[in-house]
Length: 302
Image 1 (tube, rainbow, N blue to C red):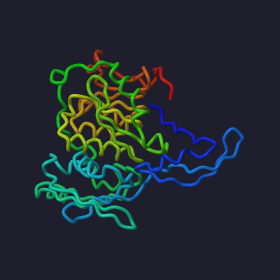
Image 2: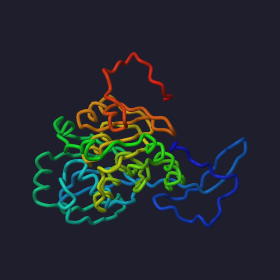
Image 3: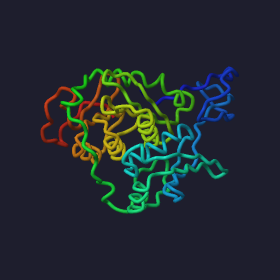
Image 4: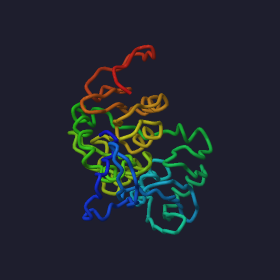
């Protein structure tokens, strides 16, 4: 699950690979092993994507223009704009020279809630907090996660199994080396749904939207991501009702605090057979954590 790009060969790639959705081929020159080469290389697409709710502009994100219907629904759910997928009546996509606008038609109740906490959020790539008007939205109440009695314990080996599948399933990452992925995995560690994007938050929103659109009981599995576990990633996972988030990199302290408050099991440094659990280890068969000490060495490589 390491984020590595397959370097182009010293000769041009076969012309049979004529299209990569979500990327474009650009001519490049390079040096490898002391040898010059010239080749067409795949570069991930990134465009401004605006979200409008009932005709009112709400946010502009920089995103990969793939799975945008998933993105529209997932963003709306994870940001608390919609309480349920049924509140989204439709999405229309409009492309222009400036970018893409997603016109969302939502229920009156959802639109009223949106107007109550209106924010202007012109973000960097997947910027999750840009323009938030109040701290209350940052620490908003999240729906309760299912208990272990409802979901059962999770085998730690399932996380390793899921992580081992990432490389071959990340087709856009293999081509470009520039995107993140978020995946929903079964309790047995099988990757069932995966979405990619240049922004880690966007990839997760696309995944959440895909799960909702397809009626997946997300609580019966876990989410794995190829990024760090930031606060926003934890909040979005909990908002989707998923009880465990596994990330290939580290969490932040705010992410750990948020996960603990939400009752979410947070796993970092999930690589091959290794992992570090930062809160709620009971879901993985361990006892509860004691008081954290920042002076103790943690046995993982950054």
